[in-house]
Structure formats: structure tokens, C-alpha cells
Amino acid sequence: MSNKPVFVVDLDNTLWPFEKPLRAHLHRYFDMPIDVKWDKWEFYKDYAISDSDFYEAVSKIHRMAGIFPQEHRPYSGAAELLDYLGHLGTVMIASHREPSLFHMTANYLNSWGLKAPGLYVGWDKSFLYTDNAVVIDDSPKNIQIAIGRGIPVLSLRQDWNKDMELPLFDNLNQMYEYISRSKYGATNGRRRQPGRI
Image (cartoon, rainbow, N blue to C red; front, side, top):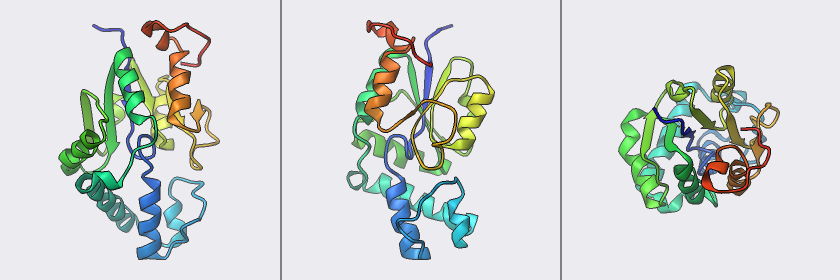
């Protein structure tokens, strides 16, 4: 059994700025202010948007990203981070979305060179949070599940998770540097420095 970590990496608002097209869609179809601060996970309920309407909008954007991937650019450093994580262990991209969107999601990832040997698309990725996992996710729910199991978690800093107790980063390049100084990065020939994972 390998002792190498399994990096369970979220997609939306972790590898690409999903929030931007979602804001535009909710503004256009539900008249939600486009510049409103999303400082909680279920922000849309403050604007009388139902769960079903919200998740329909989410699925529509997922489909559009799969059909027109070049219009949905990932964050700077996303491909480099995945490549680096792949040298340190195994990478599983895990996205909370309709399982029927597996092939569209794979098309999006392939179009941008976002490579990983594993892809999970479904409603509950927490079964991937095993003892050798390192979770990279922005969702407060997923963060809490992982922390509750004693699993290391990293995230980009977002308005909805900025007050949580975990390493938060302004961009993926910062996250890369942090991991390179952790115990995992030390296995890649880099000088080990104190890290929180």
C-alpha cells in the first residue's frame, strides 16, 4: 500500500473562477446584483432564488464550460499545480455536479491541459476523504467534513470561507509554494521547511 498522498482537488472556484459566470447568470435571469458580496454559502436565498433554480443555473454553466471550454479560462497556475501534485502523489479531481456531466467535465479539463489520473463527478465526494488524502476545496461543508476526519485541507480564500481555520491562499501559485515547503514537497527534492500539512 502506497504512503503517497491522494490530493482530492475541487474544480469550481478552485481550478477555475466558476463564480464569475454564475454571478452573470443570476444577475441576468434573477436580477441579483452582480457585485453583491457572497459571504455565505447559500447567499442566493437572500434574493428569493430557490434551490432548484440555483442548481439549474449551476448545471447550465457546467454544461457551457464543457461545450465552450475556451470561454472559461482556469485560474493561473492550475495546470502547473496539478502537474506538481502528480509528482508528489495521486491527483483526483472531484467536482460536485450532475454525474451525467462527466464527459463534459473531462472535455473542459483536457481542453486546458488540466491533467489528473482520476476524475469524480457526483453529489458527494466525501467518500474520497480517506486517511492518506489531502483535500483542496473551497466549500465550507467539504472543509468541515475533512477537518472532522483529521484530514489536511487547503483552499483559495473566498468570501464564504475566509473565516475558517485552515491554510487559505490568494492564488494557486501561493498554494504551490506552500505545498512545496510542506512534508509532501520535501519528497520532491525541495528543501523541507515547516508547514502545516
